[in-house]
Image 1 (cartoon, rainbow over the protein chains, first blue to last red):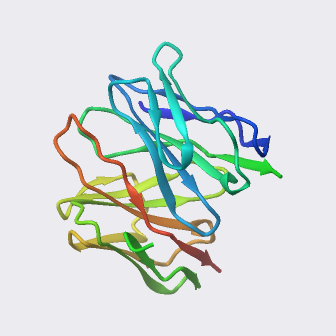
Image 2: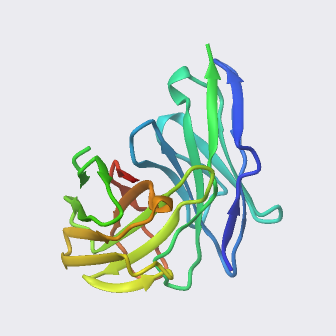
Length: 114
Length: 116
């Protein structure tokens, strides 16, 4: 069965510092991995995805994520955090069996401190 | 957000009421989804429609009834809900190409439902 784990409920980082939001996954076959961000009173917004190819994926707002097959991880990163990056971040996985489902983690709340 | 819209944004209903949530996508997608978002829990996929046919129903209680009259519209009909059904209900859509390329889902802003 597919699943995603986000081990940290909360991540705090100072503005200008690099940030990492962690995600590990479990899936049969090759994974399709996604990161979404949710701002207050808003729906989820797509940030980036890994389907195949280069393990380092670049996405919106300067975010990137690195796919690591041996560690079954897909951590979200940004070199320099902004206060406006403060939000709830969700990792999701979808397998390649043709099903339409995304399996989401519980979310990590990122707070960037000015 | 003009891609996927949801109405109403907030809804308070009693346990004996009947109400409906509406979702509309303006992206030309061929699949639509209902999710339930509760605090400190993963998003729960409730229903999936692909090409207007229901392809997934994750053991959702019958007090939730989806309807997809066309590829742009999705409804969630609510009847005799329980207080534990209070949550944020999110609609999403995607364009699903052939199986070896998966498209991302685009979400609406959600309906905040409170059952009293």
